[in-house]
Amino acid sequence: MRCLRGVRYTYTLQIGLVLLVLVLLSGCVETEVLDETNIISGLGYDLASNDLIIGTAIVPVYQQDAPTEETVFSSESEISQDIIADMQKQSPNPLGPGSMDVVLIGNKLAEDETNQIFDSLQRNPSVSTTLRVAIVDGNAEELLTSKFGESETGLYVSQILQHNMRRGDLPLSNLHLFFNLLYDKGADSYLPLIKKEGTGDKEKGNIAITGVALFRDDKMVGKVAQEDMFSFKLLVDMYAEGTLLAPYNEGKVAVKGISSKHECVVNKEEDKITMNVDITGFIKEYSGPSLTTEHYKQIEKNLQEKIEETSLRLLEQFQELGIDPVAIGQTVKQQTKGFDYKKWKEEVYPELEFTVNAHVQITESGVTE
Image (cartoon, rainbow, N blue to C red; front, side):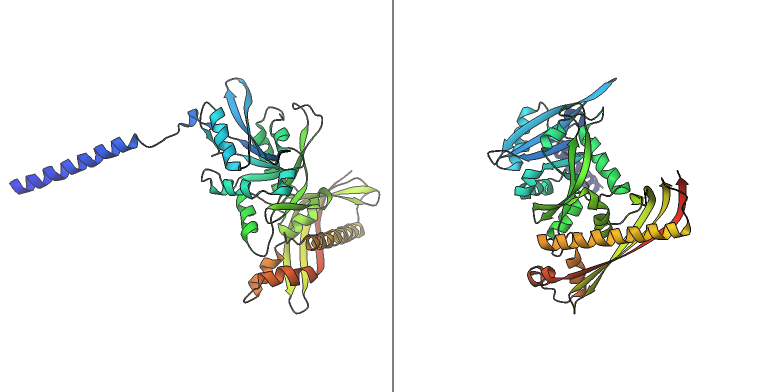
């Protein structure tokens, strides 16, 4: 009985010592209280005239019964990781990117090199893989430090991107998808291209989506123009709630509720690629006379021809740039045993022949003005 009591006493003593050590060690762990952390909502990078990288961070400051203000931190360095470290010295509280809404990169830096930027984002465990990233047609700092109504700038930009990916002509993109295309042999990355429009006043103006930035590895090498974005999204993504305003005769047709899907058919014997695109939608508004069945057929035909023409031109543009944002290489790789990427990139892809077949179906009509 005495031995049993001794064992119990020893066991209790050991548990007590373990708990004591854990309590003491917990005091050595660095913790951050959310209220004492400056949460970065937007981060921008630009190329300086001396080839240094300029970083700009905006931190929302919430005030009771008052509009949200934003504190701006700025630094420049040869290495992007040093920029945040220098900003930490400027801030009275730790800077945290945990709930960051958007990262913007000026087009001059994007055309030079973005490897450092994306490497630092990828290595930071606090940065979400669903983070929105966009290229600014101009200066990222100028856009980030502008005010658009009473909204936080970072959140405002992120919401514009998200809305246009869901209902507009922007294909889905985020940090995770960018890396997937960047590192996968047989595809190339792309990002939204945006611009601040309006007056030079930082309190006025708006943000416009001006196209899609195209990448070869970590450099921007071209873009999809705004008027070609509809066809580009058909090739790389799919529509669920799209809208298209198309000219017809002397009026315009608003095609709503657009949904789409695409298929890449490979003919390896003849080095030919056929892109089949299916689109359905309904006419919501038409500014001309009443539409008949023949009108519907003509509208479908016009849209089909326009999509085929634009899509073919885009595929040939990508071929000339030596990039593959449509990920045709991925499709070929899946169908080819012992896929030789070097041969594909240097010999096969530049000589491919493209065909685009579009099938457009107008399912119903809405309002006629």
